[in-house]
Image 1 (cartoon, helix red, strand yellow):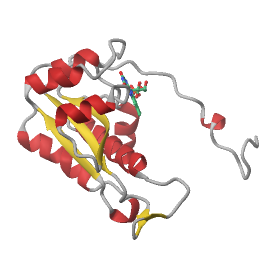
Image 2 (tube, rainbow, N blue to C red):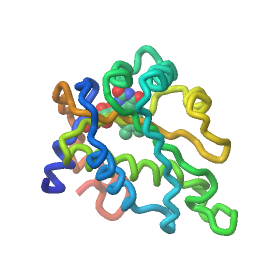
Image 3 (cartoon, rainbow, N blue to C red):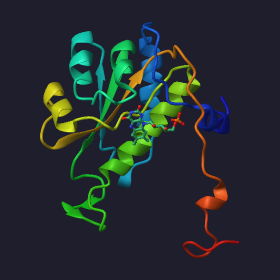
Image 4 (cartoon, rainbow, N blue to C red):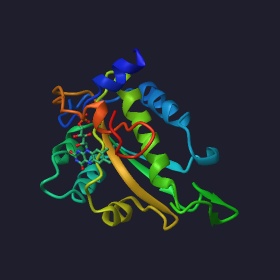
Length: 183
Ligand SMILES: Cc1cc2nc3c(=O)[nH]c(=O)nc-3n(C[C@H](O)[C@H](O)[C@H](O)COP(=O)(O)O)c2cc1C
């Protein structure tokens, strides 16, 4: 699939078929994550691939009732929980090198988008899920203190097409030379 086609065609999928994701397809998606860029190649991401229906439904309790992705947690055959190891990305000899501190959110964000695009190119659906009780998810999954859960996504074959949501025009976020300047 052409890259621009993947970038523009990927949509958040919130309804899934129960069909399992073949192991080699899953590994191809993880291979894409493997090649994501990261701060000094620190690769702070870790992925928990949740297949056990009991763990998936327990994880779903960490989402607020109003989260539109809630039902997809049970429907999809897999839920991938993207974690970040703390104190690595953006650090040199234990010291933060920029005012931004830990770049974990940035690196795991890139990894997540890489995952979503690779999944889409293989006919799979994803939706980034960020609105949930992170502490609860960490407890359910036994995540140690030096690692944090950042976001999750169901992974499976779409049961519906995603709705295409309006995007800003390029002129609304690109400024020539100085912030806020218009052509
Ligand atoms: C950081 C982040 C967190 C998100 N959290 C949620 C979420 O908790 N629940 C949900 O249904 N969608 C969530 N989304 C999906 C967005 O709503 C979606 O990407 C956006 O509306 C654009 O739609 P599209 O992905 O179909 O292009 C999240 C997306 C991002 C990038």
